[in-house]
Length: 135
Image 1 (cartoon, rainbow, N blue to C red):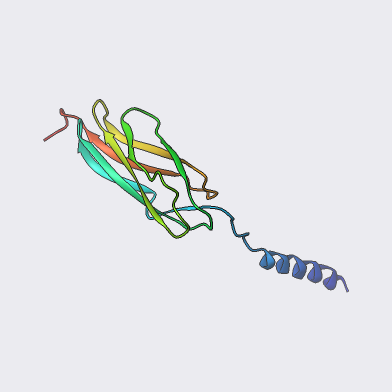
Image 2 (cartoon, rainbow, N blue to C red; image 1 turned 180 degrees about the vertical axis):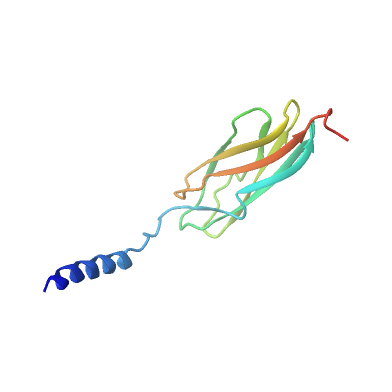
């Protein structure tokens, strides 16, 4: 009899766990093709840019209102100004100027939009070699 008091609650807990499903998000969702990029090694003073591609996997139009960066060395060069319909694709172009930087650099770019998704940021890394380190 004591076994039933342990087994029945355990079965109910397990059934409850399997019954949990993630609720479908209503609204636009940014899904990145690749949310991070590694420029590899570059020399101090080099200027590079990368295009981050995304799809609106939500069920409402996605509106990107701004792309914010943390310093002047990183510049958002372009993003869609018109709404991206569900299933539609877009790109955000980010430029980086390594002047005055050295060593390993990690930068995060925040996308301001009406997305209800969790990943509203992209990032990049690079290793900047100074002129004294060059072969």
